[in-house]
Image (cartoon, rainbow, N blue to C red; front, side, top):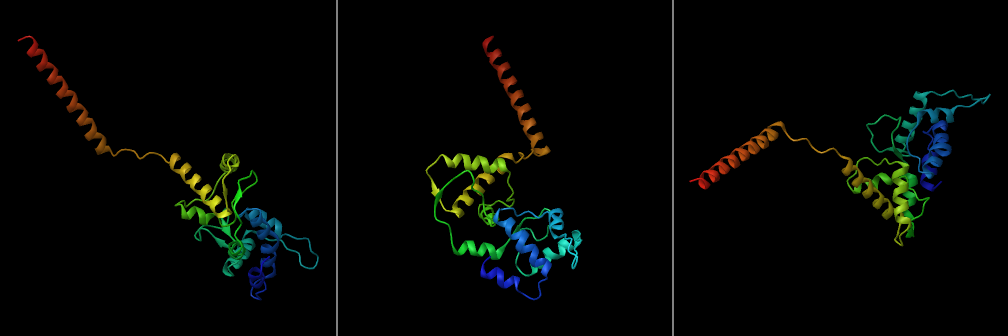
Length: 209
């Protein structure tokens, strides 16, 4: 926990339940690169059998805690218009610590994963959707693990984002031709066939003259 996070968590306007959610749930998940909000898991975490202060939360309570943390800049949704369930979040103050101390170059390895601010690398290469599958990640790490290439964390993330972008472009459906365009092509083809037929008839006529 860095000093920026501690200062924000010590704000008296922040509730204890929101502090707990950040410190013992969201922050450890971010360290493991789990940045997708699951309201079921959050309500399960917030539930307690305490005799002094029992807690039986629901989705509304979970969303209130998340909103409180967002207001205090401890978490941030990548898409601020999306509902909490399934949204991707970043921890700005946690990421700030990573930016102050950038990692040195290293060779790719099988356990490598993008960090919490991976969406920034995606945006830089023109990719709006920063989601990926474990198969995507494994294919990337397997390819580069056999190379002698060394890059820092940010450079590897940008390379991975570029690979994802190429995959999205390859899967994109081809644009269907406009009906009017199809009609023009068909008319041109019919005209070409008619012209060829007329030319063939002329050649035959020349032969039998």
